[in-house]
Amino acid sequence: MIWTTLTTDDLLSSMTERERQDFGKVSVGESVEDRVLPILVDLVAEIRGYIASHSPNTISADTTLIPPSFKAKAVAIARWRVLISVPGYQPGDARKLDFEKADQFFTKVAEGKIRPEPADDAIPTQVAATQSANVEVVSGPGSRTGRDRMNGM
Image (cartoon, rainbow, N blue to C red; front, side):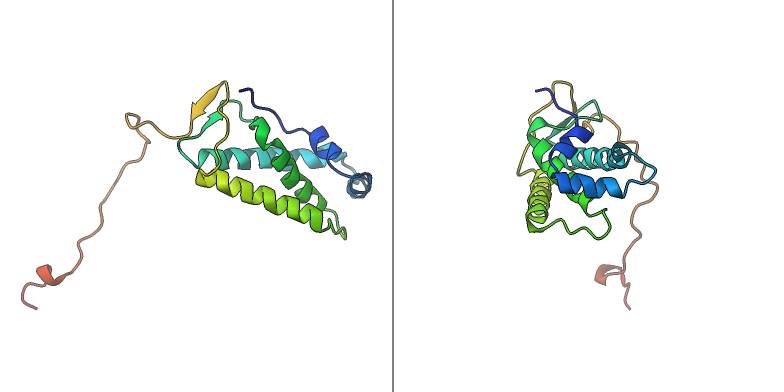
C-alpha cells in the first residue's frame, strides 16, 4: 500500500475559519505554513516511532510518510497542538476529545493492538537475529553476597 504525507493543507482544511484566523493572528513575522511545518514533521516522526515500537510492524523507507488510515488521527493531534499554541484560545471539548481518541489510538498502535498496513517500500523495525545491534557488553553484573557465599559468617 502506498503511504501518504501529512501536509499543511490537510491540517488547515480540518480547522474552522475562526481557528485559522486566530492561529494566523499570532503568526507575526512568519507564515502559517512555516509555523505548522515543524509540528507536522515532529508528529510524523512520533507516529513512525509508535509504529516501529512494535517489532512485527514495518515502516516505509521514506521518513515523511505515514499509513493513509492513520492520517485522520494524525490531523486531530496536529490540530490540537496548533490550537493550544494560540495564546488565550480555548479549543473546546470536541477538539480535546478528538485529540484524546487519536492519542489512545496511537498508544494501541505502539502496543501492537492496532497494526498499520504495510508500505510498498516497507523496511523492518527490528534488527534481524543474524545482524549485530552494535552493542558490546563490557562487564557483567558484580557478584552478590548470599547465603552460599557467606563462608561461615
